[in-house]
Amino acid sequence: MAFILLILTGCTPISEEPKPGGPVVELPLAEYKDTTILNMYEGSRLSWVLKTRYLVKWSGTDRVRARPVDLTVYDSLGKVLVRVNADSGTVDEAVSFLAATGNVHGRSEKGVDIKSDSLRWNKAINQISTEARVRVISEDGDVLTGKGFISDAKLDNWQILSDVKGVFQKVGERIEASEKDTSKQALSGTIPIPADSDSAPPGPIPGAAPAPGGDTAGEAP
Image (tube, rainbow, N blue to C red; front, side, top):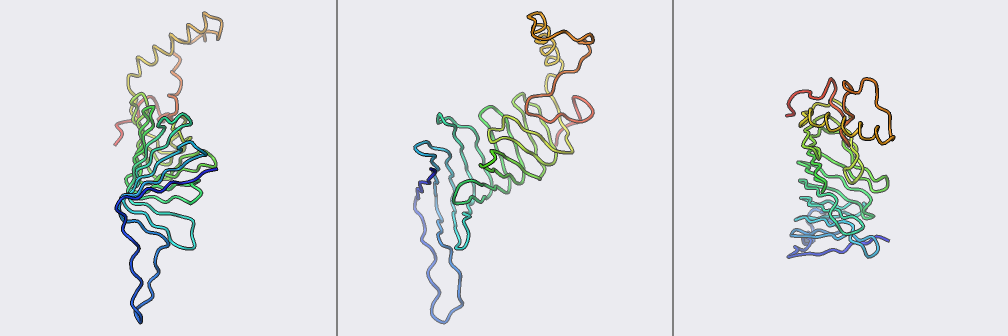
């Protein structure tokens, strides 16, 4: 069972009711205008922490809006998996959905870095996605840009969906390392050596959608 621990620092109360005879003003169900921390637990395990300076919930919806977003996601051992910062975001009460918008910057502990105007996290299918343009730096320092992005929640296996351009680092060294690894596996009886192994291109970079037309497709903006 999941539950949230809400920590408030110097919170400001909800605005006062309008004076008699004045216009009817709809007030939020809850509103916090100072440092607010949401700790999300799965049983006794800390799942993620959301820090913000403004939090509001309106009646008739299960969505809570935060501005800005400073999110840290943890694994089952309490280690940081992903950090996300954004201008604003929306999360549902069941904490199964998060939508971040405006200057979204996500970073995995393994070194994957992503920037976009929007990003969604869906807990039910363990997926991060967006239709917006993205800029991704891989664990190896490769820089890729494009439109649309889909990944698992850990940013281990990801793909840019279209208009992919990128610059790959140390391509020659990686080709050589890949060929040496292939040769070692062949000598150990794991795989056969292809007849044209000397000219075979390297395999795709883990997690990355390859840039069309070759190893480099121009400088990423």
